[in-house]
Length: 204
Image (cartoon, rainbow, N blue to C red):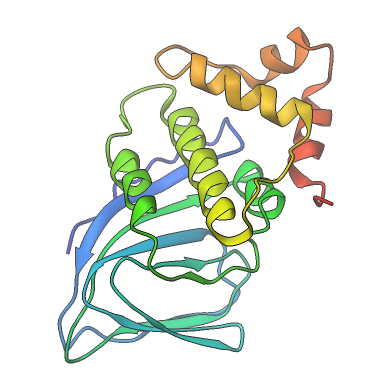
């Protein structure tokens, strides 16, 4: 099992805590949490396992993706006869919560047979933790992931507020250079506080 690659920078409303992979065995214990603080999303590369979350139960199989969403109560464990091997990332922050809500993924727990999402987990592995823009890089990948996951489930992508779409474009342009949320807001003649409110406002 790989160790977490932790990124504790918190000057941006999206923080990538970990992006790694893990193997399990028939003896891997059940993991249970109550009122989970972060968001963990896992892709099953091989094997299978079981997820119980907020009163729902799933048999999670190869090429499936499951979500351990903020605030959830959940338990998960590998199939003892065919333990899973997983790619996963852990994130937190208001932008993460906003994107889950905007793309209607905050109540999604399992997407079966979606191999096309694997690439986003692999891209998360490439985030340079020594870079000042690591969380911006991760936020852009997460945004792309959320958009495609939503399209798989619902068909047409959701329409996001203009400020957030502009933020996505700005993040794309600033992956290899510094990014300042206050400067971004100022250049568009909106306050940083307003932009943060956009992240926390429920989508319609």
